[in-house]
Image 1: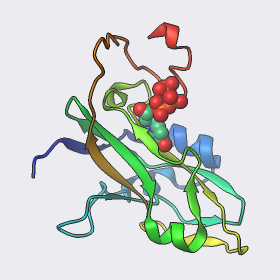
Image 2: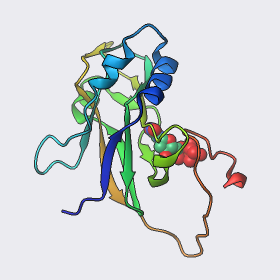
Image 3: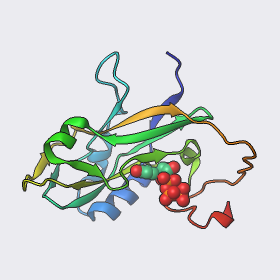
Length: 172
Ligand SMILES: O=c1ccn([C@H]2C[C@H](O)[C@@H](COP(=O)(O)OP(=O)(O)OP(=O)(O)O)O2)c(=O)[nH]1
C-alpha cells in the first residue's frame, strides 16, 4: 500500500487560538494539546484514520460543537482527505458533520492557520440522547482518496485561509 500523506500536529499557539475561539479561555490548553495523538487506523485493513477528542465532550440533542483537532495533514499532490463521523456514533446518536463530509484539500496544509483540521458536529439524535465522550476517544475518521482534474482546468490560485476563505472565487 502506498504512503501518500503524513499527519502532523499544529503548533501549540495555533491550537490555543482555535481552541479558545471554540470553547473560551480557562482550560489547560497546554495539557490538552500535549495529549493529542496523531490519527491512527484501528486495524490493518481499516481505511479510516481515527481523529480523537482533545477534551471531554458532552453534546445534548440538537447541540453543535466545533472541535479543533490539533492535526494537519501533509498530502501528495492529487490526494484529498475526506472526514466522516465514526459509524458507531452515527448509528447511536445520529452524530453528523455539519458539512456532511469534511473535504481537507491538499493545499490546506500551508494555509495561514497551519491547515488546522476542525470538525463541526451536531447531535441529531431523534431520541433525546446526550452524547458523552472522553478525551482520547475517536469521534471522526479521515480517509485519503485520489482525485482527478477536468480537461481545460486552469486553477492556479493559492489557498491561504480556512473554511469559506475562497468564497470569492475571483480571488483565486
Ligand atoms: O470539515 C472541514 C472541512 C474543511 N476544513 C478545512 C480544509 C479545507 O481545505 C478548508 C476549506 O474547506 P472547503 O473547501 O470544503 O470549504 P469552502 O467553504 O468551500 O472553503 P473554500 O472556499 O476555502 O474552498 O477548510 C476543515 O478543517 N474541516
